[in-house]
Length: 140
Image (cartoon, rainbow, N blue to C red; front, side, top):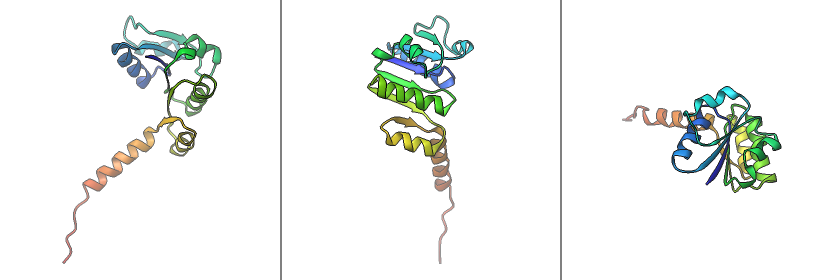
């Protein structure tokens, strides 16, 4: 599978490392050269310096033949724009993005994007833990 990841932070670098280990072809895009240091030495994937909303950068990274596009920069706006470019212009079959803002996450989920919202996920997990650990009250 051909996977293009925008954002080489903790999440992006981990995904890239795992996907390469599974035998997938991975391209990484980040606008900071130092971000690529998170990857293992001799990382076999393609590294492209630039922003994930620049079509020339995305084409250099192989978006035209990508099976999966993942946007996990620290910026919701960049992730949203990059994902929409991948979905609408390049018709990448599977587009996944991270959005921290729960309200915006719902809007873009409604547009057919696969959205991961860590803010909502963590809040849901905490709420569930609180409910499970609640003392049971016995009446009577």
